[in-house]
Image 1: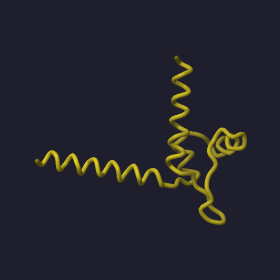
Image 2: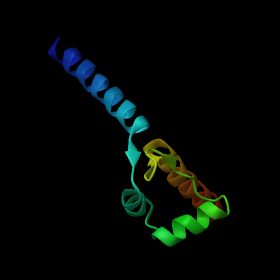
Image 3: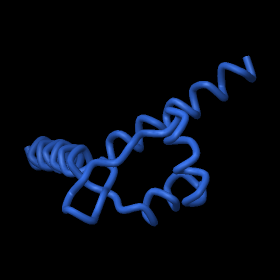
Image 4: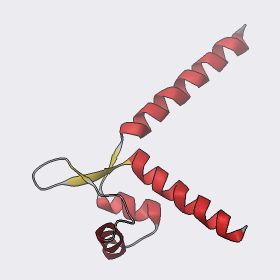
Length: 85
């Protein structure tokens, strides 16, 4: 009985974490760390449509959605694996 209850709590925690990550916002330095690219590389890729654009969170500040950055990273991993065959 306790195992079922613990399992339910863990599943709820995973769902809560997934929801938090889906709506989490990352500032530029956090994005740089996550993707391993410099500021200039990120903006060059954005300019040619190869990196997601940020959303405006105030008049002077922008951020990227965690879920969008995760998807971009996953696409890079997938394309790299396809190249290796």
